[in-house]
Structure formats: C-alpha cells, structure tokens
Length: 440
Image (cartoon, rainbow, N blue to C red; front, side):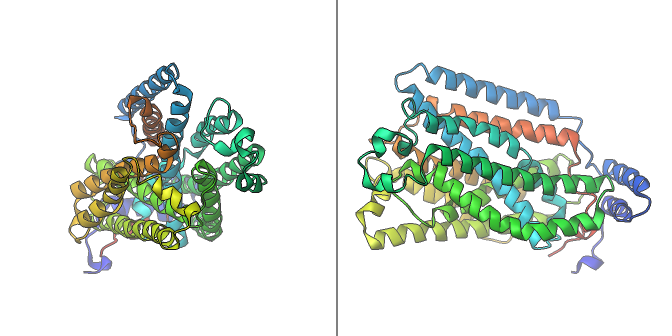
C-alpha cells in the first residue's frame, strides 16, 4: 500500500497546511498563527498539564541524589567513591544527550522523511547540552585535585614521575590540555545543538521554512565528521584515561555505539509514552514510525556487538600484556559476571526482543527493550569505570547511586521545561505532511 493511497488524519493535513504556508516568503505572520492553531488542534501544542508533576519527580530524584552524595563524603574513602560514582552518572547523561544530538544530525544528513514527526523528541533531549557542560566541572576538579581524588592517575605528578609510558603521554595527558579540550568539545557541541534545535523551533513560528531545512542538511554532514572526532577524544580523555597505560583506537567507536543506542532508547520511550497520552497528535505517529525506531535500535545493537567483539578479539589474538591487562581487570576477581551481564543487556536481550518485524511495532515490547538498553548503558559504563575503584571485586552500594539519580532527574527536569515551552512535533518542517503519510 503506498503513502499516496493511505488515509491521512485531518490533524496531519491541517498541520501540513500551516507548515506549507510558513515556508513561503509572504504571509509569515499569518502562517505562524495558522501553524499555532493547527498545532493546538492536533494535540502537539506546548504541554500545560503534567509538566509540574515531572518537575516534582525530577526535584525528588535530584534531591535524593545530592543527599546521597553529601553523606558519602563523610565515609572513609568517600571522596574517591564519590568521584568514580559522579563520573558514572555524568557519563550516562553525556551519552544520552550526545546520542540524541547525533540522531538529529543523522536525520538531516540522510534527508529522512519518516523521522520528522519524532525528531522534536530527539531535539528535546539534545537541548540540555549546556547543563551537561556545567556538570562537567566536578570532573575537571577531579583532574585538578589528584591529592583528593584518584580518578585520573595521570594527573598526579607522583604517579607519572618515573613511569616511562606516562611521561611519554604527558604532552597529551596533562591537566591544562585536558580542560582545554573539554572546553572546546562543549563549545562545538553547544553551537551545533543551538543551530539545529533553534532553527527547527523557529520553523514552527513561520521563520526559515525550506531554507532552514536546507541549511540544517548542509551543515549536518560536516557536523557528523566533527562529532566523530570530538566524542572519540572525549571518550579517550574521560573514560579510557582512567587506565592510562592502556589504549585502543576502537574505543571511541565503542562509546559511540553505546551512545547512539541509549539515545534511541530514551527517544523511543518518550515517543511511546507521549503518543499514549495523546501528546503527539491523533494517529500521527503510527506503527510504521515505531518500526523505524525499533529497526534503528536493532541495527545499532548489532553494531555495538560487532565493535565490542572486534576490540576484544583483536586484543585476545594479539595477547600483548599491555593490552590484555584491561580485560583481565574485567574478568578476574568477580568481574566476569559483570562482563557477561554487559553482553546480555547490550546485545543478547535486545537482539532477540526486536528480532521479528512485529516486535518492532509493538509499543510495550519497544519500551521493554529500551529499558533493557538503558540499564545496559548503566552497567556498561560501570564496567568501564569502576574496576579502577574496586579492583579487588565489584562493589555496588547505595553510595554509588547518588550521581545517577541526579543525572536521571536532570534529564526529566530538562524534558519538562522543554515541553512546557515548545511544541512536541516539528509542525513547521516542510516535510511534516509527508512524514505523517509515511507507510512501509
């Protein structure tokens, strides 16, 4: 059945009329008013209900997380435990936000039609990149105060002195350059996030129209190249350098795969939840759109497995002690169970849950898989970070959950703030009607 013969809801048609009017050079004010009216009629206007409950939930999570963090500091070894737990929570929030930013750029560079009706959700989760930048400040503090925090061993002159390998890496692994690189990364990510998100939002008001879409498509290709470079070096700096003697050129790709997966997971959960609540119009987001989200999740699940296995296999085959030590730290002393859990949550379960075509269209199954992916991201990051803090054996206590609770709370709060201010769908995009009619 083709898209042209498929019945279209009146909401899609009315919204597209507004979007088409908005794309013209004349009648901008009238177009914006029409778009606003159509958006309200189709249930995609900024939310007035439920936002306060979301903010209350977010405040409770952030408050509980802060309390746990403060109490942890009073225990023996509390500074180190807080440092590694904070990096765990920060890394989760960073991967979610950057994963959603990549999704936005990917849709523009591929000129995707199907995703127009769900792209605003990804823009919503990408928007708080400035908040992530502020939350990086404690991570920078860990490098600046190696006497108090042992998170980054290379930042301690006493550790570096006499170590030939670390001394050789000193031109790159030094605190001023570490902070300067992070500042550059966040400037680049913030500029591009504002570029994509603000132009999409202005289209809803009748500003930009097709010209804005072309501009976003034109800049999405170079951004993806810059994105690949910046997240790779950020992964080297913030995660791989926890074990400064070890290195892997594929590590950045591994982080990218997990980043994209968790971004897709939060987008999928938000889309299914908002569709069920009628916040994405009436029958605008269809099973075909859900299938596309499920197919992308399935594809990146396989990609993550390929990259993860490739990294492990090459190191295992080479059998060089300087390389194998990284995996030995994650196999010995009780860490093998965590390693197997990572494989189960990141590949085995999502792969079989989404294997069939029907599963990719089933909202409940998509949400279940997305929750598995999010839990898998937390476990994967724990597996990457915590062996440096608990080399004798895995150790997960209540002291570790403060920063992750803060990260989840911040994400929910930013989501609520965005939904209260902006429409839930990109009704001003020239391809909105065509996206409504998308049919496999």
